Amino acid sequence: MKIALIQLNAEDKEWQPKLIETLIDKLRDVNLIVFPEYFPFDISTSLHVAVTQIARASRNSGNAAVIAGGLVSVAGRDRNTALLAHQGQIKGEYFKRRLWHEDEVVSGTNGVKFEWENFGCIPLICADAADTESPGIRKSFKEAIALGAGATCPIIVPSYGAWLNEAYWQKPLQDWSNSCQAPVLICGVSGKGQSFVDYDGRSGNYGGGGSGVFWPDGNSPIQRKLRGAHIVDLNSRSIETRSI
Image 1: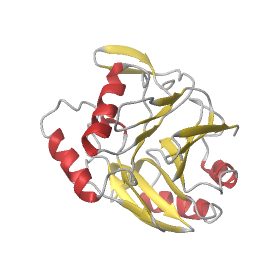
Image 2: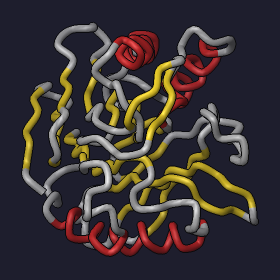
Image 3: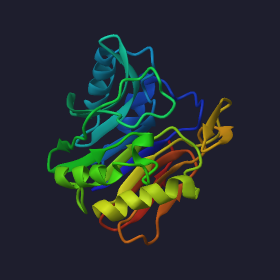
C-alpha cells in the first residue's frame, strides 16, 4: 500500500476546502491520501457539508481513498470526525474518543475499520493515539487488533499538534505500533501557527511536528517536517516527497 500524507504549513493559504480537489489530483497513483486534522473542516461545518465536500473531492482521486476530518456539527453537537471517501462515496466515519481540552465535544464510543477495494486501515485522531500509559489503553490495542490492525492494515492518525519529533509523541506512537504489530502513520502540520497550545504543562505554537511512520520492529521510524506530500510505501519502507 502507498499512503500519501498531505502536510500543509500552519495557516497555509491552501487550508481551504475549494483546493482539496487540486491537491488530490496530483496523487492519483497512491492507494490512500491522508490530510491533517482540521482539513478541510472546522467547527462551522455541518456533517452534511463535510460529507459532501470530501465525497465530491474523492471523485477525482482515481483508485485512491481519502481520509480527512476535524470538528463538525452533528445534530447540534460538536464532534471530531474522520471520514473515508472513495470514488465519490463516503465509505467510513469515525468519531474521536479521547478528547484533549475539548469540553464541548461529544466523544465517540468505539473504534472502526475503514475499508475500500482490497485495502483497510484503523483510524485514530490526534489524542486517540497519545498517553498510552492511561487506564484502558490496552483495551484499545486489543480492539484495534480485533478490527484487523496488522502488517497490511496500518493505523492512520490525522493530527494538528506539535512536538511530533519528541518523546511526548514518539513513545505512544511506537507503543501502538509494537502492541498492534502494525505500521502507524501520523499526518500532522508543518510550520508554526501563531496561536498557542499546552502540552504536558508546556506552552508552544501549534503545528510544526510534521508527519511520520513508525514500524512494529521499532527500526528506522521515518519523520518529515517540511511542507509537501510524503508518500510512504509500506512494502519497501521507502518515502518519496512531492511538492504540492
